[in-house]
Image 1 (cartoon, one colour):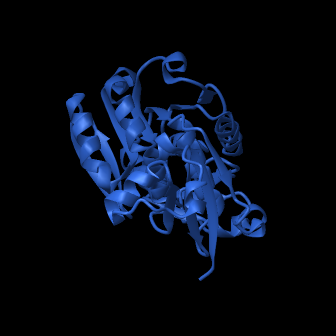
Image 2 (image 1 turned 30 degrees about the horizontal axis):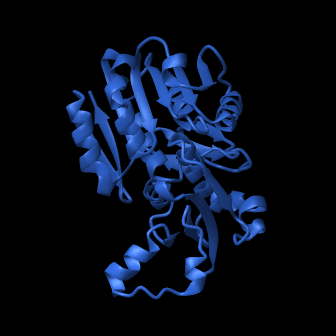
Amino acid sequence: MEWQEIKISVNSEDTERANNIAVMAVPYGIYTEDYSTLEEEAWDIAHIDLIDEDLLKKDRTKSIIHIYIGENDNPKEAISFVSQRLDAEKIPYTIDTSACKEEDWLNNWKKYFKPLKIGERLFVRPVWEENYDAENRVVLNIEPGAAFGTGAHDTTRLCLETLDKIVKDGDTVLDMGCGSGILAISSLLLGAKSAFGVDIDPLAVKTAKENGLMNNFKEPELTFVCGDLDENVKGKYSVVVANIVADVIMMFAPNVRKYMAPDGVFIASGIIDTRADEVIACLEANGFTIVERYEQGGWNCLVMR
């Protein structure tokens, strides 16, 4: 198998959070260079104070996370996923794809993205696929662009499958961290009356709006805005959905209720299994009751009231 490398550089104090996000994107083939505590660790582990001079020259203020992408995985999707979640966490970073064959992820990335049947009612179709059989499912046309969210990643798929079970005619939906807009648009296809998506990434919002138009939805039925939740979200929603990292879900937990209708539902995905108990404890401490928990590929999707 051929592997492609993506390098993410972050400040040393952000290493743990950034590494957790990288593990979400590709839960294998990751290692981290962090020399911030080189002397202490050399003594604690090996009981030596003689360290190679080249190691001593390493930048102690930065860490580099190396992600290795397998030949059957989509580098573009991994890069989009990591970028959006680092932005959401307000972690400064740079991403180097020089070791990642450009033709494999920039020009030919579409080969990784095929039509998907999701749940009982959804069919996700990349716009370049002309020949397909939706089998009487509602068709979501999508052009991922540079925004995360194609339905292929386990976290997005879990969310879509959950929306397929929950969304009913006349619902109103709030998508917190909308990415490509796939969740909000799918909600409308599944019968929701309106959907409102918010993201801090202007490129994600641009892509989401384009995907909305591609599926014949526009304002006021479908709205995407760039910015802060409190400044942009008004009213109450039947369904609130967030496919984001565990830390952001916990950060949102005290305030989500104010966006929910009295009989509303909160769907949270993007929760890696190693942090699920921590997230559940936080949500329950903020008054939520877990009514359903779905798991797939080491990820969790929670349904709460």
